[in-house]
Each structure stands twice: as structure tokens, then as C-alpha cells.
Image (cartoon, rainbow, N blue to C red; front, top):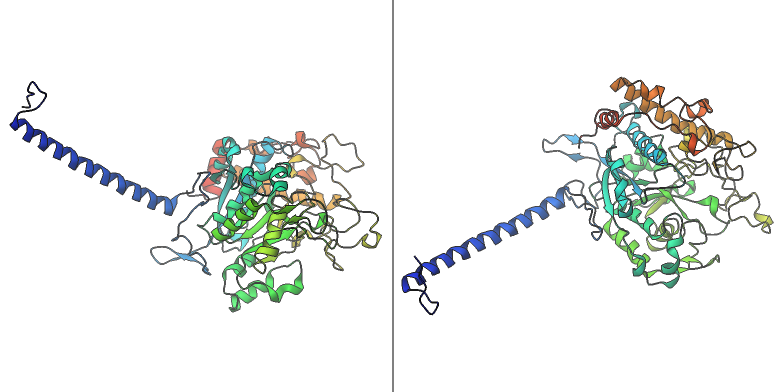
Length: 508
């Protein structure tokens, strides 16, 4: 028993007992601190292996060194039993804002749904595709769009929430800092797409806009990226890659870091062509990501339309998106990291059906009469993407031919109810665009048929295909031209949950 004397002290027996109690408290404190430190180390270890970071200040999406060896040519991973496993390619989109005047909310949801189904149909999970590559879906979500990202999560997209990797206030160059916020579509927020370079759990990442679909597997591209360049298999794969400039077939880089296409339909012949930001195939690379960020922070962007405008004063400017993700990657792969990327045939990959001849808008200057009618690539005999045979197209980006969920079936000379939804004959071919749109609606119909076969819910067809507008093209998914005429997918939330697990075979 501890007793106190008048001066607030303790008896000698009490002193010994108090000392024993203090020792116990000290020991307990040491144990608790040790347990806390162990827990922190365990959490850090687990985060390294399994987590996808959503910390806006953390520029690493994932860092699982066991998933795929970095900086190493691979053809498969192996599980603990030694069995060969297929390579899993990351397919990513970016969601920068919840609303988009180009599409309705239901249209954007269905766009993400059909995009996902097209990935599935061109992967090894669909045996008839002939592909040997598996896939995993990602959505890089700007924090401004986090409130609606659950819609993509319900479709099996793995959500990565990020802030813009560079804030406008960090940009040192005056012109870029003061003007980038005006850039189409999203200003500096579009740089969130760069986080595709940090999805390290996969050897290859394919990043596209949401208005996209896959028509054929891209095994040839993946093989050429991963197989040794001097092996028989690697050489065979490289020979099959369809280039924008076929004469460069033999000068492809030994280690292909990226495939891209260019936005030729915007360029004045002889000027630098911007990158087409709706599609890129890349190897994740933290160094590349960091270099991009430093270029943005430096902000060396020259205003105007001269040959010395844009990024680095090298001519990468003056077109839509040049201050953001149209101009920056073109500058990076041409000037900062030359001989690391491959330019694909833009009529076959990232197909937009765009007019790349210099005879009309955009950036058309009538006084340059010697250029009229010539290919904007500044070569003779380039392919007319408005006429490309559909059997040759690998994937489609719905831009010039409009969004399929906007029911753009109206010719310019017809009475159109949908605002700005007609096919512009100056930049695209109407008949070809109808074929392009039909391809998307056929993919949606394929998904709907599979859902009905699996769930028995006939309303998916009776309600989802009740439209009568140009049914030979839109397959019942439109009841009038224009965005308001779109008939959304009629599957219930329960139907879609089954779709994710049973049709798309998502396991986790």
C-alpha cells in the first residue's frame, strides 16, 4: 500500500513499490512501440505488393516487383506450381470529369461497358479471338471525378484516384502556366493520363479514351514489345506490325517503349504532327513519368503558330490539345526520348475515319495552293482513312465519325434534330462512318445477347433494342438522331454484376 506523508513524499516501502510499477509501465511501453513499428513495416510490405495507391501526392500506382520483372523481356509469368500463366495486359482509361457535353451520362456508362466487352472479346478469355494475352481493366480517375467513379467500379474497372501530377502553380513557364487551363478538353487535369506509366504490375499498359473499342487482338504489338528483337519469334512479330511509314520496318528500336499514332488531319503539311491522345500502348516506366513531369514544370512552351512554337520551341503546338496530351507526348518521343517509340498506321490502329488530305478544315489555308489535295503527312500516296476496309481495322476511336451512343445518323443536308451530331463531310465519309458506328452497336448487341442467355432477362432486348431509327446501323439502340435519341443498355444492376463474374470472368 502506498501512503503519502505530509510533504507529499512516500514511505520507503512505497518507494520500492512505485519503482516496480514504473518499470512495468516502461516495459509495456517498449512492447507497444515495438508492435507499432512491426505493424508499420507489415503494412508497408503489403502495400508494396498488392495496393493501388489513391494518394494524390503519391506518384506511384503500384510497385509489385514479383508480378512482372521490370526492364526485362518476358513472355509469361509462372505461379507457385510452375505452370505457365498468360501475360496480363493492363487496359486503362482516364475519367477526368463526371459530365461531358459530348455524351449523356447513360452514353458514357454504356461506352465504358462496350469498351470493356471489346477488350474481353479480343483477349484469351474469349477462345475464338485467338489471342494469348489476358487483361485487367483500370480507370485512372481524377479526384474531381471520384464521386462518379463507382459506376466504373461496378463494371470491374480497378479504380486509381489521382490529382493532377503537376499543379498549374508549379509550372515555371509563364505562357503555359497562364494558358494551359484553357486547353481542350481538360487543361492541366488531362496530365492525369500520365499515371498510365506507373501501373507497374503489368509489362504493357494500353491507355485509351472512353470513346474507343477494340476490334481485333493486338498480339503482334505485344509480342514485338516483349520478345527478344533478334529472336525468330521477335522478328516475325515485328514484320507484322503495321507502321505509318513502312520503310521504317527495319529501323524499329530494339526495345520498343511505346506505340502511338499521330493526329495528321490537324496538321499543315511540312509541320510537326501532334500525338493522337486517345490511344497509346506503353511499357510502364517511372523514369519516363518523372521526365514528363519535369518538362511540364519547366513549362518551355512557345506561343503562336510559327515553326518554332509549342513545346521546347520545336513546333509542337498550334493544334487542338497541343499544350496538353496532344503536343507533349509527340515532343517527348521525338526530342527527349528518340528511337524508343513506333508510329503505327493510323488508319488501322486508333482508327478515326478522318480526312488526312489537305483540302478542307482544320488548319486549311487557301493561299497554299501547291498543297491542296496532298497528304498532310507530306508523302505521296498515303492511305485514305475515310475509305479503309473495315476488315483491316484493329481498333476504333469515335471522333470524326461521332459517338455511337449519340445516334449520329444524319447527313449534313438532312433535317437533323440532334445538335452538331451530323457527320461532317469535310472531315469524314458518311457511309464509312455508318459502318464504323455499326461495329460498336454490333459489339453492344453481342453483349446483350450473352446477358440474356445467361440471365434469361428478355427485357435486355425488348427494352434495350426498342428503337426504330436506322435500325440497320444502330440495331434498335436509337429511336431518333442525336444524343437524346439513344436507348441505354437495359440490363439491371444484378445482370451487370453477373456479367462481370460470368461473362467477363473477373475473379477479383
